[in-house]
Image (cartoon, rainbow, N blue to C red):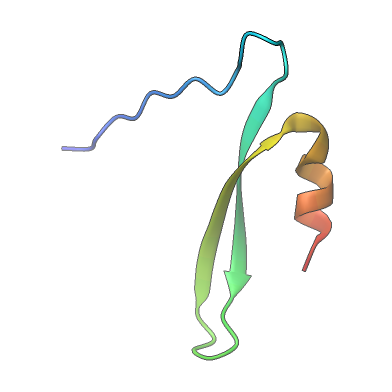
Length: 51
């Protein structure tokens, strides 16, 4: 049975957050890994443009 995770990503200050998941290829094994971070909404596009 799958585990359900409930998390609040919004604070009382009104700043909204987003969980960002990006696929990254490992140079050693050539396999894909997933990088997960929680960022403020205004920094999401900058994070996704990084290599």
